[in-house]
Length: 441
Image (tube, rainbow, N blue to C red; front, side, top):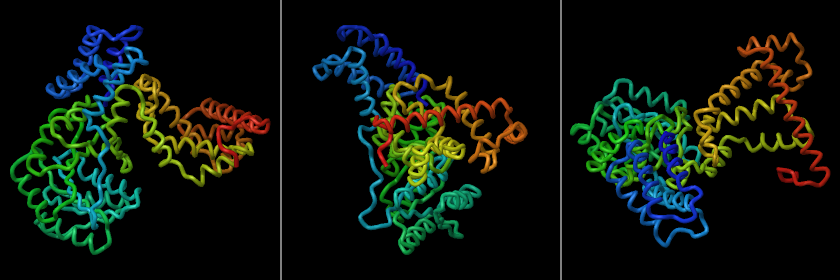
């Protein structure tokens, strides 16, 4: 989402590289570029003015670290102000003192509200909660059935009722959730193409009947400043507790994310980063600021790796590596784990200094990884365990089955042998008493 903004900010900071001191005229020149970058990203004009004023004051003030270079000083200040602009600190979805915690989800048609309800349910399940989805959207055709399908995929129960009154359904859903021992009840309410009095009146009735602990607005990040206007109207009518920003993996300019907290005064709690039901992340303003500035987001990367990894499989793999028993089956498992962590483009954003590669090599590398996985999937379990079985005939069969060539199969086998050789070198280093990259067994 923030590609163009990232490039413009990087160009602005490079102007300061090599300078011995931060001069007012240098900062002003860099901030002119930052202003253009923010406006092109569709950030609210008043937000841009206030942001630049704070950055200039801090960059030329006493709080700048004297040990940093001019470019580093300005980046440090911009990072701090971006974090502040994005909300400052991480806001949690706090459980109610007495369950169930009722969460009312609202939004316009097309914002992905029903899907986000399923994603939030999956997120809560991962954290040991027992969520219930309530189908209170009775306006859109097949909305109830859609939520039921989402609930089946998420492994979460869905409450629905034959009724034409969404208030009655919502109230009954909360009662059912309390009786069935659910600790979170997620109300999927109706939307409209535009904000209108009827929609807001219906949502107010649902709120009065269910007394939700959190009212969350689902917003499409692709709509830019329109999303900010919609959030203002919903916040005025309902008093929002937070925002779920969807399609953050898209090609929008990012103005909504950068303007919401400042203009609406409503924090972003979660961001949607893909189409799968597990593609929902808590929103960390400081981490997002780091990603915008190309500084990476190592903490989120580590969290994704921990979620994608199977502890028992990791332990088994470590034992096999120590015994030089690494097989094509292990190779395949590692590729699948990498895919579970998300698109390669997205992962590069989280590695410091690697964001510049986005849009060039990552797409080619992604295709290559998928080709390798297709080749491995076309092998039999016996072939993956014992690559020595792979004669010319078997390689031709694997190439046909994976839609690749025999040359591609041979290239993968060479890469696998190089990996095994590296593992043997590590094992020999361990026997000579050198430090291994993993702890002793």
